[in-house]
Image (cartoon, rainbow, N blue to C red; front, side, top):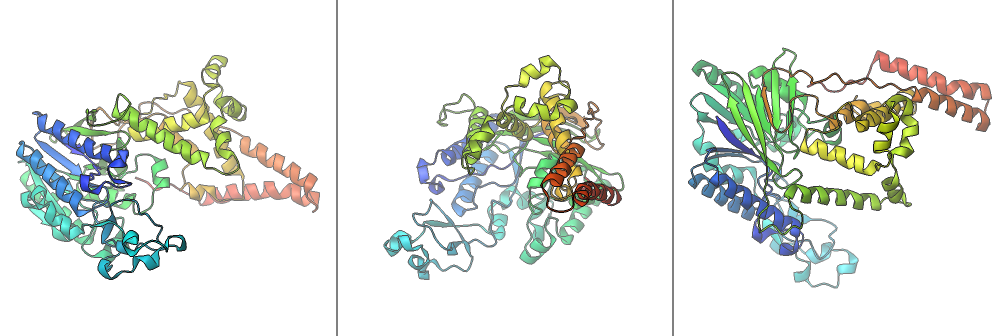
Length: 537
């Protein structure tokens, strides 16, 4: 069976364009992208089913939800079967209203973001800062729209979910549908009716939801059907860098992956990260779960998926479809992808420019030739390889790696100069981290080395993240064995620091010269005895 998978549409109604109304190009573009993708789907005669894995709207306001539901009806009326999930951008437990435009004043509080806020009887003028006290009460009042609750969403989208379901778990806003007689899909929401339970148990599902999932899987086995699932949050992180940078509530932990794999779910489609990714996890029992993450249509890379699923052989064909540009999208670049790349890089440059003490300009000037002497013995580039990358800026390399991480399938294979340079540089950094006894950076990195973090961003060593044809119920073989890069830089740094301490310290030179090596040895011994191990997926 072939079907479309969309995620993170972040729809914004024309009546709720944030950041200055119709003068906000980003929000207008997001609105037009949604319209373009839905029109394209209507014309696809080869796809009759569309799954959307959450974050339907950008801020959860009711107007955007009602407009989006109307677009879904138009898609359904064109002959498509449509099933949706809602997620964290779609609802708010703690928020009652959302600002329509940027506020003209700076508030000490934002009382409209509380469900108990009484807009009519709130003195907003008393909440603004002193420099805005001269404004009238009308000028201080925020422009707001009501925000949906999970119960609202369960009702608004019922015709694209529970009304078509053969089974549902109302307490978890989740449901099961038959895409074909022998192919079933679980649409698993990430929120509970019980607010306290959601925050206590997050980032996992409720016990009632797990019991319901298991009952559907048992029923499928009796009827000879195959069951896969859709969630919003991925069950396996796309790369270690995302796991480290995310919060526990944003990144589903390995418990969920292992539990669903042991229940009998071997394939999950997710979103949330805006990444194109195919990742695998396995439980202690050896059950494998494949997590296919679909990128957002409104961010880098702007794309959606076509999945061709063969349940009898556990085979999946994936095709990533980039969002095309329409005449309504007023952007100078030839493609949406080029526009989002330019926008992303410019945003990062602005952040670096704001660094203190001219640090921003220094960061943007650092080139490979400035860093290569640090890792020359580890990287071992030939003169020709070095000449190819010597003038590349570190900032540009980091942007490349970040774009690879989001778009999937990095292009720096192990035989390229950039791969060798970055792996050599990581080996040097890992050596220094292991040797220095002052700060437990291993814990901050959650047990990963810098090599383990950077290497997947350079090149994808498993199933391709975009266009792939693979068996999803077993762990894939690596396409190559990554070369090992080693460095003694950490020991050299400790020797230099010890020598400097002897010369500069007013204390006993002998004690100072021994202190750092002893501390380093004790740290390494401790790490061997109880190492910080990354969470296993």
